[in-house]
Image (cartoon, rainbow, N blue to C red):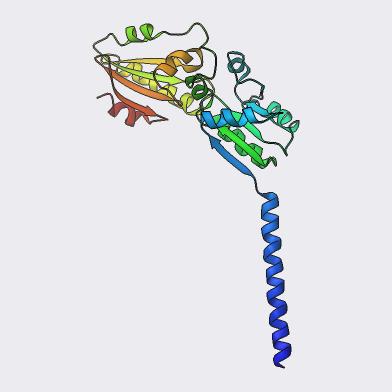
Length: 240
């Protein structure tokens, strides 16, 4: 009887061990790598790759103004076009993805995971960080200069500056609030909205790293700064 019990126990242990190894193997086979790399790490990684897959998920207009060498433009905002382009890539090879500041590339990287890509690397801070690190050409000509910006601050009123982009959801949501403040508080506040895509050099000079970026200036000095959406009530508190 003891021999039978021992045999059964041994069989159970062996079965459990085999099942555990099988689970670990399956997990290993289905695991994917998704890492956010800083500029230098990203640059080093793509340089080491021979046939590198770099995806720029910005708009065609942004891409035309400057992009990483060997990058392919797959506009995240054009969902059908994006998925068709992604379908042409090799899922077994690493994919490097970036946008302007980071929000679109994060969403795109998550989509790549869902589509079965196993090695995904995102550029932290996007193309702005790449440019700031001196790895891209100078900012395109045109746009507001620092001198132009300083002139906007030459007032005895508070100046509320909003750096935005046309594709940014929170930026669009914030616009009606800013328009309302510009009207209701015109006696003491000047509202300035700046399209960052058309003023990259200025955005870089002011260390704008995401959108919307809000700043309040008083007597030409920055007294407050915030990244992200704020309600009308919260924003007005900063302008009292």
